[in-house]
Structures are given as C-alpha cells and as structure tokens.
Figure (spheres, rainbow over the protein chains, first blue to last red):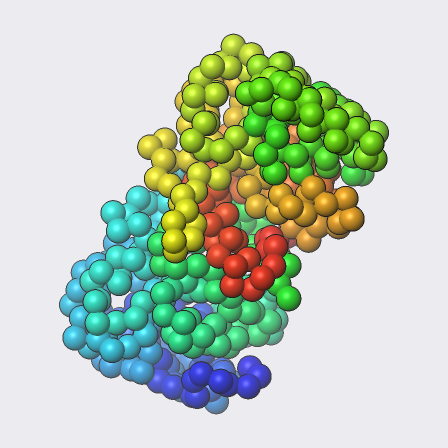
Length: 225
Length: 225
C-alpha cells in the first residue's frame, strides 16, 4: 500500500506455503500485486492449494510448486513448521544465495498445558537460518499476525504491527515495506537477529491470550512518531 | 482505576525500588491509593528517594526502607537489576512466603550492538524467582512500560498493556487489577510462567525500537473483546 520505495511487484516464494501461515501471507501478498509461488514438499499439494486461490481477488497470481522452485523467486519467505526448518534450508543453500530470506517460523512446542518456546541452539529460528544460509540475507518477520485472519478475505483491516529483525538496513526496509501488504499493519524494525528469539517465542503468549480471552490477538507498538 | 474486585488499598513493597522502574511504579501505585515501601540495600538511600515523592500527588504514601523491610508488605514487586536477583530473593525466602511476588525483571545484557537477552538457566527471571521462593506465588508483570514515562507526572495516559504471567488465577487477577494503577493500561493474562522468558526479553526489542525511532515504545494487545 502507499508508495513503494524499495521494491516493486516481485516474485515471492513461500517455503512451506501450504500451511495456514503461508496461505494467509500468500493471499495478502498476491492481493498487493506480487506474484506468489507457494512451495511444498509435494508440488501437487501446492498446485492444488494455489488453484483454490485462483478465483480470489488480487492483482498478483498464486502458483504452486515444490519448495525448490519456490526458492527460485526474487524474495523468499519461510513458513515451515520448525521441525523441518533446518533440513529444508540446508537443502536450498544455493537457490537462496544472494536473496533476502524472511524467516517467519515460531519454534513452539505444545503439551497439555499449552504452547511453550523451544530452546534453539542458535538462539532463534532466524539465527539458525542465517547460519545455514551464509550467502543469504535473513530477516525475521511476520511472526504474530493471525494466520486465520490473514486467510479470511472478509478481514480488510489489521490492527497489528509486524516486527522486523535483521542486520541489513536495506533488507529491513524491503521487508517493512512488504509488511504493508497486510492492510493496516506497519512493518517496524525491532532489533538485530540476536533479538529474534523472544519475538518468535512471543507467539506462545498470543496463543495463551487467545485461549483465555477467546480471540485472535495481535500486537501493536505504541509511542511511535 | 474502576472497581476493585480483588484487592483494596494495600501495602506494596518494591525490592530494588530506588531504580527507575521501581520509582516509576511506586509513583503510580501510590497515586492509585496504595501505600508503597521502596526497598533498597541501603535504607538511607530509599528514604532519601521516598522523601522526593513526599510532596507529589497521590492518596497513598511512599516510604523508604531496606529491602527486608519492604519485603514485609502485603504484596511485593521485584525491580532489581538481574545480576542481584537471585541473591536478594534467596535472602528473603521467609519474609516473602505466603505472598504474591511480582517479578518485573528484564534480564538483559548490553554491548556495543545494544541490548540482548541473557540466557537464564531457569528459563526466565520469574521462573528463577519461583524456584527460589517455593512458599510464594510468583507472577511476572510490568516488563515493558517505560520507566521514564511512569515517573513523569505530566503523563496521565499510557497506551500500553501489562502482560501478566503466572500459574495462580487469583494472583493473576490481583496483578491484572494492580496494572490498572497505570492510567490507560490493561493487565492481560499472557500465559504460564514458562512463557515469561520471552516477555522479559522483549524489553530488548523495545529498546531497539526506541533507539531507531527515537521514542519510548510500549506495546498493546489487539483483538481483545
């Protein structure tokens, strides 16, 4: 929305894009005019899901492919469950080199008491991604916006901010701009990658809030100019 | 503000209350009618700071004392720097038994690149406090509201929420109600103590936001009924 300073309409790949978070982001990014390639381990599954979006609104198109094809896009989002995260990224080092890779993964465990953060040796999924992809510029973002609301076309305003983490100012600016594909959302720089772990884990708190208050909670940063 | 369901005006101790966070909370809790005892390692220091508040508004009073005296209050907040956290609490096990202890500590390190979360063996300062204080009911809260704004009497509205973490529903309700002493703020249950670590660490992100955008950032939860 608004002026584009950093990116025009680009081709965006979404690794693991057939899950709720990937589908929701695909819908919003396509509606904002980008071409989106939903990736999956099984191309047929991604193609099937992409076809379901073919008749929805949006200037951009949503295509389905295997993850390696999705990784060939201009900019790549990662929305796989954490347990497949390292293996998938390790297998795509070459495809992802030279690109901005936006890690959207929330490493959570669940038990009878609900969600809890997994301890990640690298500190966070985003830092793990950066270690596995030394030739890519990894940014952490899109951890908190409700997947269900993203994928609901009747929702045309989000009272949410997207916290964007990374080391590279240009890439941060690109992803902050990308966040504005979610109507009402602002992309906000929220620290270096070493501060991504708590942002990823905060999804557990939002789930706890959702359960207690029967809602789809999000968060906004207050006090910005 | 509003009706009190769970607590009347009580005596609140603030361990390490001479720091910015403790002073800011003391000001707001006193203004809401509670009697507040600021605790310090050195009683004289706490008395001196309490005297500075003597002429400010507020139905409640602010007194200064040593930490052990502050720990004798009805309800106790912990606002010490993390490096003194374990030693102080270990020394007050008896005084704090049977009480609600609200841990407000953000375990952060700082270096040339700014703030970063410390790794806590117990998972979080709040979980560490609960381990050290088996006879107390530990709640995590008040991690994010700007200490500077809390202590600025010209600020009469906060666009912030207070995330409240704990295991005990009654104690959670008490602390949620206590949070409303900060005008405009809501106390929101945000999960069990095992989900406190990321809430404490998120203060590092707010500091990064403050530095980038030259502000005093806070956060609110959206989507609540």
